[in-house]
Length: 77
Image (cartoon, rainbow, N blue to C red; front, side):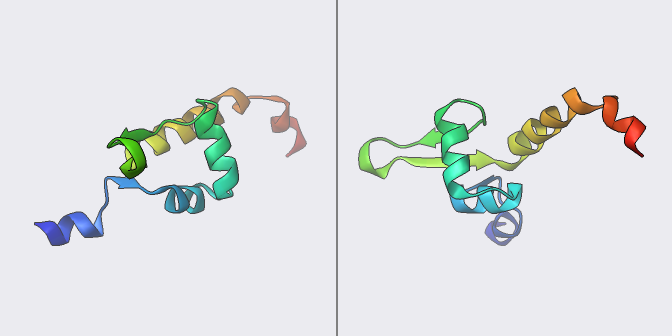
């Protein structure tokens, strides 16, 4: 079962999440700090880890597309 989990992670570390979104780690951190992008903080103190659940990232990304749907860009095609 552990092999299955390693093939399909539930969450990404910051560098992996930034790469998956096609943005820089610095921009990801800024969006996280500003509360724009969802994350999970696990642990306490210096051992605290920030993770980005894949399903949550996908939902967040989809919501970013909705405001532009049906906009004036349709006329450009």
